[in-house]
Length: 260
Image (cartoon, rainbow, N blue to C red):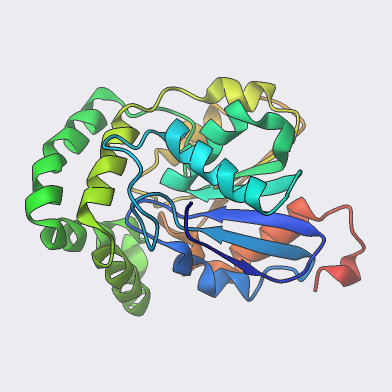
């Protein structure tokens, strides 16, 4: 089973799924700002952190099934699910397969669109370098995921992100990239899911076409979106603001004094 950590004793369970070349430690900055009404369940996705690789091609559906095993092991019937980037893709696959489990779905600097042909080609070209020169791949890519206008201010956070990326099993990363290439369009999930849907996006996100993604969100009363003044990594760039939005939107039915 996947590696996971639990924190807090709140009545609402928030499951946190990290992105590509990340692990469950990425939530450290944000979790101090999250409401005590949440019990946090942080999971290392397959081939990341302390979790084993589960397939040569780790599709989002395969990863969603592994996440479900963790949730079932904790006897959780209803959860709030939040996924960053690849964790968002996994969350969409989870929502498609297990909608009855979700109180809410949060796409956290992620997208419901599949890779376009250019992006697929880029990923396929990266297979060899991930396998043979992973450190170079990580060092070249990680800094570009942060707001380019605040690169100097974010230097420490970029170093943290790079350290986490370099700790990732390169074969786990490779299996995940192969899985991401196979992603399908998941807009229908957002059109059909009855639970609350929250979308947090970055104005300067080089990994997600934010404007296009927000523009084409289904026009439904259960969907709320926010565009922040940051890049792809809101958990490191704007942790307190991201947490405040999550607290407000997912716990809005609770008295304000419980959300401090």
